[in-house]
Image (cartoon, rainbow over all chains, first blue to last red; front, top):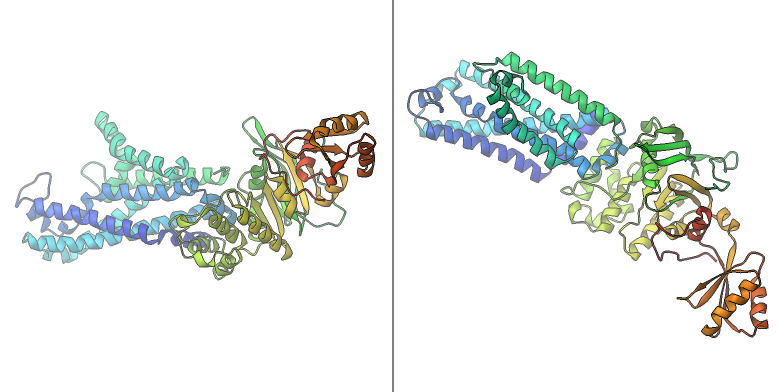
Length: 260
Length: 331
């Protein structure tokens, strides 16, 4: 039943406009980030931007992409929230529930559908961004040989795994918020306002609380851990938010009257 | 409000198989009771009209039958499956609930494929459902480009996907032009000919009258009447419509009839007088008019329409119903 809901969801997700907008949009945004980093990188030294020396290291390939994780998170959150909430605003949920009255199976299938869609979009964006990074490195005469060493490839796959975990987290939070608010626009605005504004304000007022916030926790996961919160701390906090969000979404979805 | 017999869920002859049966079905939202102890008993194979004014509780009842809204109280069974387990019967049920709702960016065909996959139905059946609803030619166009009538057809096609035993259509003629309404009527009748039980809700009683052989009347969340349309017609008194040759005699004629104990209603627009014909035949009225020197240019017996029957049963006027829809009275 969950598989049926999954394949049904993909019938909707694979439409050309959504597919192109998400895959090409994410790839273009990630590539732009990479180009900016390489074009603006100073020859040496430490600062806001990585230097050309740092970019030549084994983990140089992933620097650009990991800097764009907040953007990836926002996109994943927004698309996931819109996909769930629009079932209410379009009124399509009632059609879906008549054909699949087992609501948990429907919810699980929809979540899996959106998650796989966003993970594929992310992986596509990563492949394109890495190709762009190779070209940009050559343009700035940065050696890429360390990128393809054993250490470099190991770092690359670890980073891809970390970012994928964060994308899953952002997506599930988006799906849950969309389910609660039932309005695509309201859900996206609420999510973005939280991640971009509210968490920053809270972190400025009391920096010690920042590591307990969902957006910051997932950003920690995506970047493989920071000098402050560790990867495992971020993973634990992020997972806690995800479990609570899924449980709350499942609870309300199975009990709510569908009047839309 | 009195509930007419053949109503309280037990008006069926023993042995009649029921497609939909509920007992004390109730739904409250906060302190507002929207559906109040409704006992439905809809025979299998019938075309059942579910009528009542806007806000009477029709859509809420239908949503409870489809598992979309949880009843506050009561029980029921649909095609033998318990109302508390919608999964046990919804594979055999097709439904069009209120306005059709589909993904605007997908074609009609892809919308149906998504539903067929979700319901683990044969995707190959999408083509025949589209053909049945007369939408084959535009099946690959995006849903957002459809006219209201085409959207309604797609809703019908979606309802037909599971090859249903029970088809529930909520206001299927909403937004359709007269030609579309006639076509929809034909479609619904053809579903019944195929052996489906069809439950059609509408606030247009005259529409229901033309296609249904069973009727459930609801008002303010309460069941007013249910039973075969033929039985309801048989219990309804007939009216006689009379018109004097000279219009200026109409008021005098009405007064003469009233004096003779008849209940009359003058109908200015038609230039006629409607006489409730309890124990009075058309011939009696003709003789009475002639004896008072009034020649009639029209004299016709007319069975009350379901709309009038509804008003009579509920003791209301037509407030809440669409005006000017009393048409096609059955003679």
